[in-house]
Length: 206
Image (tube, rainbow, N blue to C red; front, top):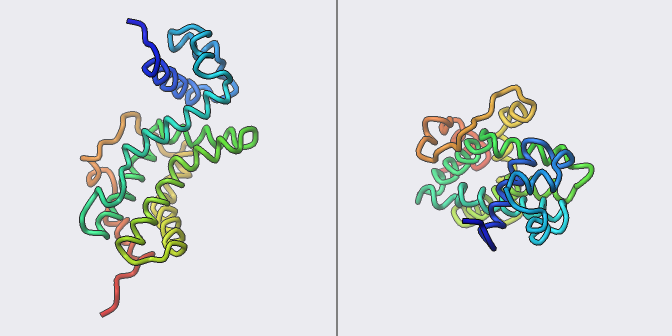
């Protein structure tokens, strides 16, 4: 049965995401996306009048999917510190996934031509994660909002370095299959993240 309406739109977005990740924005044509999605160009343009509009929608689609896979820190544990460690661990786990790493590479590649869209791709991973983590530091540790965001950015930077640049430059291999949250403890050094967390948020004295 032919896809219609919202189902067709989501299918086009998922197809376009794969095309953009594999071939880049410039080398991906609307004709190629229509053919790959097995729909007509008329249907494609009815949903997305330009390739830029399609790319914007793909970014929003990625944002929703990534957010659903990350959750919020409080969903990882009732204990605030453990929740931070496991949340950062999940971020580290997902960044290794080829779909996420290639998305980040795409954002870097398009930063000069499409700075707003590149910024949107950055925000999908780092902006949203830092904001959620900062909100958790406010609620669970009594941070002021400004200090919480500084601490969240610092912790994320420590957790992802040097892995992230090594992934972006192809020094470390990407993970092809979606990492499962159940495998978090086996795939990520949560003890290391705990040590980094205590550097950024020292335990209270006394």
